[in-house]
Length: 236
Image 1 (cartoon, rainbow, N blue to C red):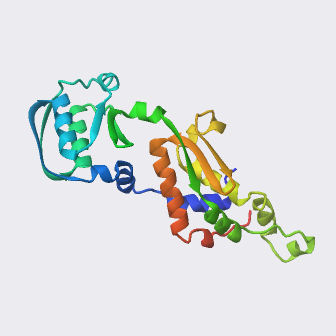
Image 2: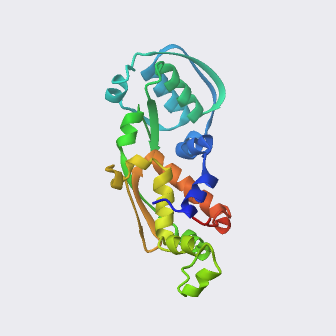
Image 3: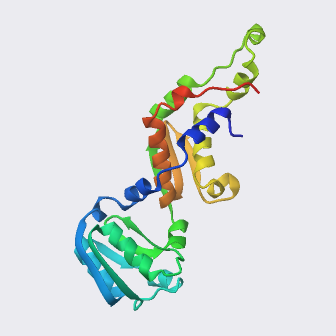
């Protein structure tokens, strides 16, 4: 069940800045500025090869996945850009090739750019670990405490709300915030392939690459803001 605290966390954090997320996903190797990217009737295969040479990166086109989208090595590319980042240029090339917007995409991993489809990337699961010990301490410090002496409830109309919420520790609050915000239907308790656990102050997550970027931004937003210190509970 989503607690009052979790709900307030989500309201404060959404929506995300997609442009910042995209920049993080692309990373420094694709930040290089290309003086001119110009293709007049070039085959997509040749355009990608020229782009890779200018950007100084290795590129691997996943032709079976692209062909499933109706994008072929000889798909015509007409494009002219000046002074743009390598990432922007590649986006533009793929947008021209993917006229029906069926999901041509790419990922950068270990210095290699794979040009493929969004559907293929969505199926790739990665396990990553995040240090969230300090964040858990912040949540726990502000979490309302259970009032064990019954006479307190005579003077505290929110005692029942505090009693209920006290059953949710900082770990469950954080996991609930993540799983309720990032691709909710993808998690294992909904029958999906993703999972999240907290072990010794470390958040261990199995998710897709794109969702990992969103999780990292969510954790950064929580850690960098004072949202936790402003959480309050309302009476039921």
